[in-house]
Image (cartoon, helix red, strand yellow):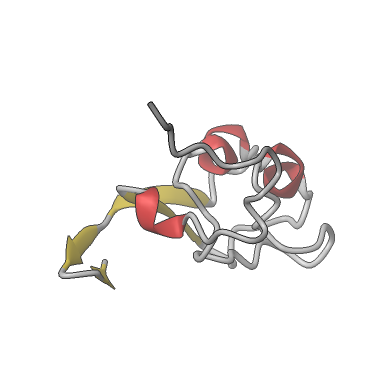
Length: 89
């Protein structure tokens, strides 16, 4: 029996954003650029610390850690509706 298993650390090579059912949305007017979201993101898809979050949705899995850990709650999770392989917020 064969199993489809990928090698660890292949997230950079494999876009995993299609897995999510929610996506983080940032209110940049409330963001204090503390980099907490960027430090907690397990996929490293929140952009460079100090610039404020710039989410790469190709790799975001929608785990919500960024929204949960944001000290000023400027990140909210929105449900995504996917239609025939296309994303619609």
